Image (tube, rainbow, N blue to C red; front, side, top):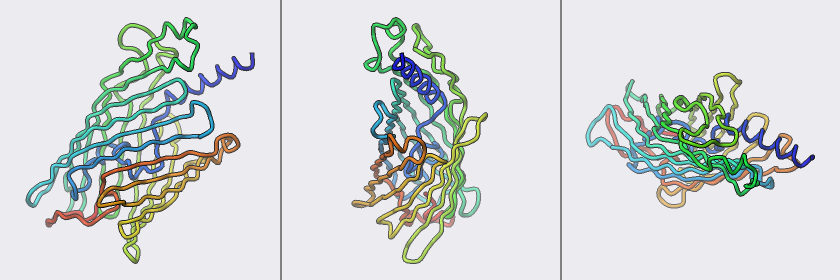
Length: 319
């Protein structure tokens, strides 16, 4: 009886998180496109950017949350003096938590326009779909509720708009999520356990400030806030130091749940590897202290000076 009650409790918790949470990464400056489509194409150093990463939370708990993503985008770099430019790309992620698996697939577009001599505003959009899956290997398939449930279905169109204002010293970024799909339900025949779980609209707000230090150090302070419109936001504050465009190190504080350490290194050219370790400081500390995250990318995230020059250039304007 106790085991049955515990399983029911886990399912209730899983449904609650499934309906409320969006994937979250400690290195949110590295995976900035995953937070807002308007952040794609902020650099004019290199036309291509490819980044992928994975995160495993609460190592030690069975069926613990795991997320992974792949982002690839291309910037149409103007050939002469310019006032605007375009970026297109794809973004794919997977969020696994308990018996649930969410796959998201998007095409992205961003338009960047100078609104002052050295300040840019960009607007962007993700357009795609979500696939909701049920991992029945973790359930009793003889149960009629499981056998009669849809194992996989699509929810679409998923439209995510974003806007970003930035220059070489600061950025402000806002994106809106789950505006066009309102519940986790099958649009065709069949049902899923827990369906239709509500998918409330969320916002993600990020902002940061860059400070130049001696010896080619760049120190960044950034904040990420996310929430539905009916609850208090979850927040994360991030401190990063980029040293000689070769190494980066820092730490994050995420609410009352995690203290995080971050280390990133440029291997060759713009091949960058980033690691993050999160230490649980909540009740999970006794049973599942550790959370690990890795990201690998061909990206100008370290902030080389731009090769493109014009009277309107925002030198080193990306974060």
